[in-house]
Length: 164
Image (cartoon, rainbow, N blue to C red; front, side, top):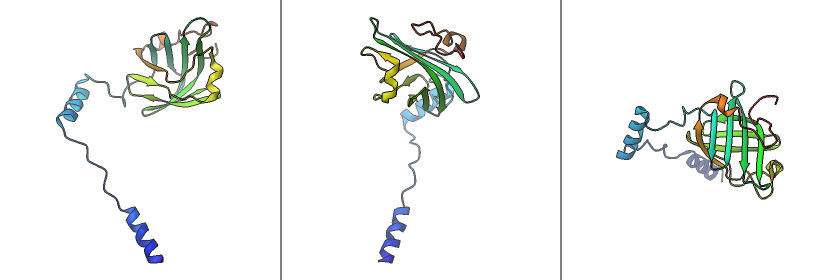
């Protein structure tokens, strides 16, 4: 019995090595485009700036060494919208966002930021009407921090400024 268990554990530890990066024409073209600067490298892309899609807006400004202030504004008019402000930390292609008790991980690919399709219930407090932060998807408008800091909620509060 012990031998069988030991053999099973030994086999479980065995596995094939991770696959080597493919050297296909497409992957070579992608690497060449990255080297030439034609395609943004998500690992090197900055997070700070203004982000938008239609009436959805996001601002991100540096707040510390690894921390950012982040604000989200969704305005569908007639009492349908969201306004939230908080902090964010980047971990590779993940952005850990905290709008107070509303905490989640967004995806960042260097050109877009995408909120999860199903947001925590604590995020509902930042929205009115039928609006929600679910699946908020924005693309970079500008890398200018000064521009990002001007995003305001309908109340006039700046969403990415400290202490306002």
